[in-house]
Image 1 (cartoon, rainbow, N blue to C red):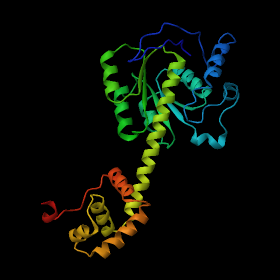
Image 2: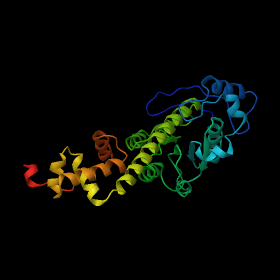
Image 3: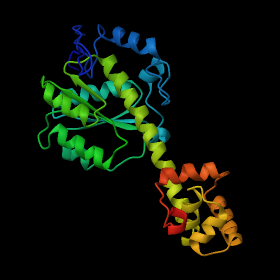
Image 4: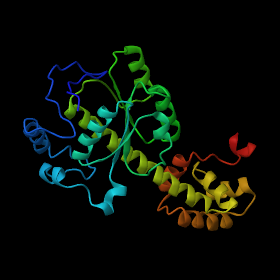
Length: 278
């Protein structure tokens, strides 16, 4: 791997070059790497990667768990750089997939596991900023970490404004990059959980009849059953019956639960009468 000293958009340059660490590590560099891994038990950030370093270096994740392992995608046209980075990421207990172009990455099917992209700013097909825009549009739960060998402050500012998690200058420090990757994977995990929760809510809402959806949208505005009945032209008893079915199908324990669900679904009342709005 390229020797690494760290510089990001939000930190000062640290001039502490390390020995070359490549796919075939020399005996001179191995003690420093193991010392770093053992010192922190490899960035235990709630992603199941907190094993002792000796176990991580000695063995890969079990094949049965491979599809659920947090994944780091590397997009860099420098083959030596991306292979070295992939090696570092795998030693850190995560899964790594490397691509030499933006389109190569975009052709990779989407996966529903915590993931992030370590992205070179200059690529042979799309620019790093353009790929960032596509990732944000199509895979919003996937944070982007930029790497670049060029000092370009305006582009760094654009990347950060567009939502980049970090922006590193090459050469960089391994520990700082791994810490940033850990934070990005945790953010991705949170995003995936939110999407799964929202999808489940949408499915419950779709299971409601049209009338039940109308009752739900009005009940969460604070209207009484009598007022909801007036709005819909049905009796208060009928509203109560619909409301009970809504509570059951939406798996809500209280009106507060329903209101929270409606907020997440961005529900709006189907209509309001002139009398009640006056």
